[in-house]
Length: 381
Ligand SMILES: Nc1ncnc2c1ncn2[C@@H]1O[C@H](COP(=O)(O)OP(=O)(O)OP(=O)(O)O)[C@@H](O)[C@H]1O
Image 1: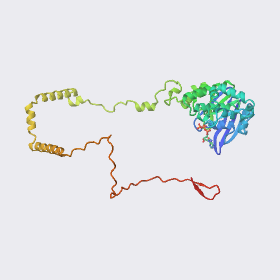
Image 2 (image 1 turned 180 degrees about the vertical axis):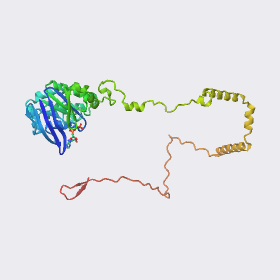
Image 3 (image 1 turned 90 degrees about the horizontal axis):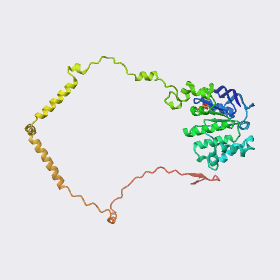
């Protein structure tokens, strides 16, 4: 069992964690939830012996005090960390990564058995044992990181944001794998931003705010806690898929902003201003227009045309005639050259014609010089 009591961590003057009490039992999954900078990673680092800050308080694993022990001694004692960002060796194979996890004396003797256990837990790692880890997907690399931590044969496995950067589907697979780790009797302590999926497999959870553990409860109670739902499960923020709370009421400010307000003035209809209905006026206008069209006769139209000044007509006709003459006198276009006919030989260069000057701007050239090994000078590469 991991027991952290009164754990305080300071980075210089800054208190990142104050009097934290956290326990993780055998075969139990415990989640730490909290906002960015609350002190979650600091808690895991303090337990693993890799914290850069000053750690005080009491940290015990199965009764053994871990305070002040180096990180490798803490792994020997049975606490393994899967750090944020996984920390796998991308150029090595899956098997090489896993084997490197078995450096702890408690794991070395049983390396073969532990490897078989990891392979049976994550069959994909057995299938891909020769694959270079850098070529694997994010989810597979996370599996390698967990497998490598498992190779130290821990009693407590700690993980810092294991689902970071994984798709929802891969996160689901990851949490299912962690549930299988618990079945081996290993305690799991994880810091997670994915509250919904982590609480779904967890037994208990802690909330950390501003360096303080402010709440702890069973995972089921935390999932149903309205404060947790609002802060970590996205309820009320539009992401209602995270949980199924009772239908929220429209916030007052929103309803006020969009409410239909009563009109401040009494309105007067257009009909009452005109003395007649608008519909009547439109209908009457339509009738007048139709009547006017019917009354128009062809002789009236001719009379209107005749009123156009004759000098303007004559000027327009003269203009048209002038344009037509210009079009007739335009030189005929040359026939288009046959695309498939052999091209005529190039005309001999006329020496008299000066060649055009074309200015070309080039980017400055970068030259690399290497210092001679004997220091006598530089050689150009
Ligand atoms: N090495 C360090 N030196 C100085 N301050 C640090 C150091 N590591 C963390 N802190 C500070 O301690 C506080 C807690 O950091 P921590 O990384 O534990 O937060 P967190 O809850 O894990 O946040 P996140 O979810 O963003 O990782 C933060 O204010 C952080 O800036």
